[in-house]
Length: 247
Ligand SMILES: Nc1ncnc2c1ncn2[C@@H]1O[C@H](COP(=O)(O)OP(=O)(O)OP(=O)(O)O)[C@@H](O)[C@H]1O
Ligand SMILES: [Mg+2]
Image 1 (cartoon, rainbow, N blue to C red):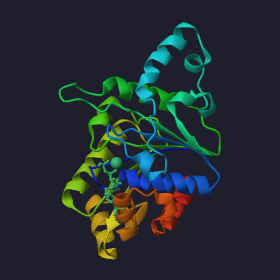
Image 2 (image 1 turned 135 degrees about the horizontal axis):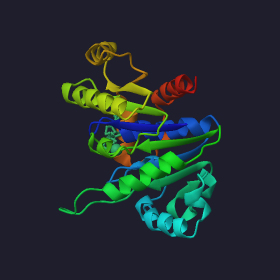
Image 3 (image 1 turned 45 degrees about the vertical axis):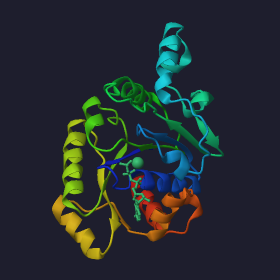
Image 4 (image 1 turned 90 degrees about the vertical axis):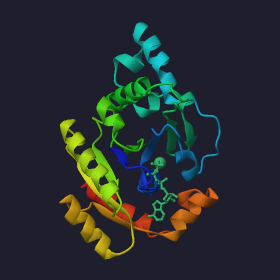
């Protein structure tokens, strides 16, 4: 199962992506988390020490090299096990890769990085109990390059305010143009059940899941605590959400 989280800046993509990783681990999955945000945060939320991690973007050279040698990685579709260890941090059944490319001012777009990620997502073969969780860059720019075209589920995180809803609707349209069949809206940081109905009415769709605003989540982020260590109702909600996706 390949799942990507997208949405407007600050709506909770990284928070929900991390919670999803923990829930998948609890369900016995091998999880590959990919932080595709040019300023990555997932490592901290998943409890990895901020060690140096070789950005996935550097796999470009490796892909080219192996292609020339007719190596197995490029020619055949790789399994998660075949991915070179140097591009990931690992903790038990959880692996983390980062796309990298913290762009310097005026350095242009991150197109090559997005291309590597798109290829990887398209080629990667997953076993039944393997999952890839992608934390995408905020906004809609990456849709122009079709990076997430091959995911099984696109989860659009949305908060109950106009700007977030408009971005979510735009993402819905772009995802359909890319041919992504499973596009779901996920409400986050809701303050009341009315927030949920407001979102469903504005979007014209039921929400796949509704996450309420929880002080423990915000506090953990401020303290730099991994979300696996905290008590939050969101853990239960994310398990429910995954059961829907599995079904
Ligand atoms: N349900 C929630 N309850 C309370 N705080 C939340 C909730 N969801 C997210 N937050 C907080 O909101 C802030 C932004 O969340 P997060 O970093 O997950 O958003 P993001 O969409 O990944 O942002 P960016 O676009 O910058 O990558 C964080 O401080 C996070 O702890
Ligand atoms: Mg984020």
